[in-house]
Image (cartoon, rainbow, N blue to C red; front, side):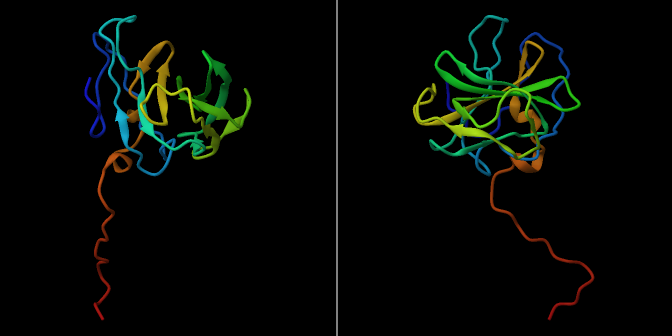
Length: 168
């Protein structure tokens, strides 16, 4: 498996699911974290794959909701802290792990609200990271599809000229 060098957009093998709408307004960690490993859908429901993306993040860093929703789970699964958020007005659910939750089931969140902090251990990455997942029902989707294109672009911001104002 190769490390991701940028956003990876893949459709689930053998499915015709509707892609997720670009409703997120922020990354779950940092402003433009490195994608350590991209989404790799399995060829079959129980096949090998990577059902989310791994984002570089230091231990203790805040983890934020990417869109408005309601916490549907906040607890431990297989020794890892997990937070799941059902996104408002959709049939989508995002997951974040390993995260020490700062919320409880039923809490409402807005885009950018903290849901917890990155745990120092429990990650499957070689360094601390957050595994960010996206589901529609039981089907995993690429969580990067939630982000609008302007959030996915790399590179420095650039200033554009203001038209109609004379230069000094």
